[in-house]
Length: 90
Ligand SMILES: [Zn+2]
Image 1: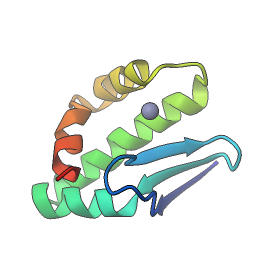
Image 2: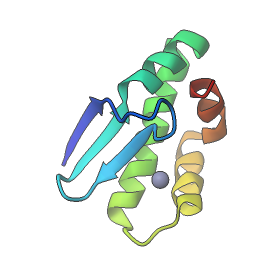
Image 3: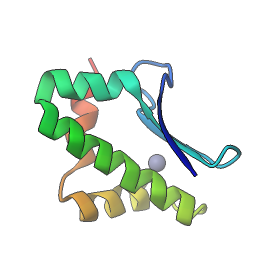
C-alpha cells in the first residue's frame, strides 16, 4: 500500500480517497494545506491521522459505508471529521 499527497481536484469535495486499483491512500494536498493554514499544524496533523484512519477502514472493509468509515476515524482520533470538512470548504 502507498500513502501520498495528491491533487484530488474539485477543491474540497474529495479530501482523501482510497484507490483499490493502485492500493493507494491519497490525501488532497490543498485540503491539508488549508487545514494547516486555518487551524494550525497540530490540527493538520490530526486531519492527516483522521483521513488515514478513514481510508484504512475503507481498505480493510470494502463494503463499508461512509458513515461507518467516519465513525471508525472518529473513534480513533476522538474528533469529528466535520471539523476538517468545514475548514477545507469555502
Ligand atoms: Zn470515505
